[in-house]
Image 1: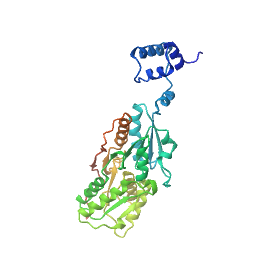
Image 2: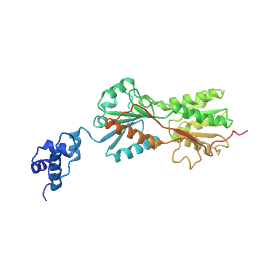
Image 3: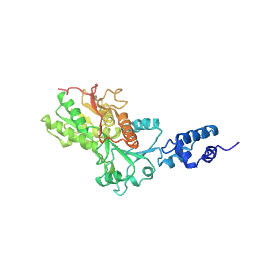
Length: 335
């Protein structure tokens, strides 16, 4: 079996240099039309196909996008990944996802090998200092954030303060006055802004409604089903448990519902429960939730990055919207 033709074979057939063949086949400027036609004809005659890895080296592009997330086993982050991957794959890019757990401030994103060999980076809900943001901005790599505002970066953002405010006011509108919050703020690099903004929105809604804020009703659910289960158990063990619960994520809300079922209780007959996301399972369990187009968060970030890589930079963040989906898990308090 004969070996496949090389770029040198095409150069010899066309009577030009290897560099000219490379430029002509990559459709770069400064190649005469007649020369380009001769190179393309030689490549077709030899059935030459460029090596993608060699092309990447020649162009300085690896066709790889890195994505940093706080955790890999979260429904939200998996959906963001899926949205980004669909858009990037259609454009010929690979997506490499990694979790950031290290709390060492010296462990910068730019020090990660996966980031150094990528063309661009999507940062999803990772705590980034102003110093690290400046370092990323000064590097060759294009960066887009999802879920939070980072200095000198364009971002796909949600008004998490408004999400929590609207969710809490939905419970207030039903007549609830003793409302609990299941949330959670991570540590180190995982201390992202979402839970901070959602807690602030909850507090603002309680204040606007003239309701007292009871710190005993604000508990950590760790953004997981198990964490929501434990948090709801703590709330229901109080001398005066809540009549309604706002969980910062649907997964924590699922855990809260499970605890009610374990106690032969139900929502909303005993306690109303509302979440955030519109998880795939939310409709099955009748969970009222603040809907997020999560897959679209990742897709929007990918589109933003691709425009950056083409040299198109508008300088504006992409704001994604949310809305209430009312199901059977919320209702007026039992009198």
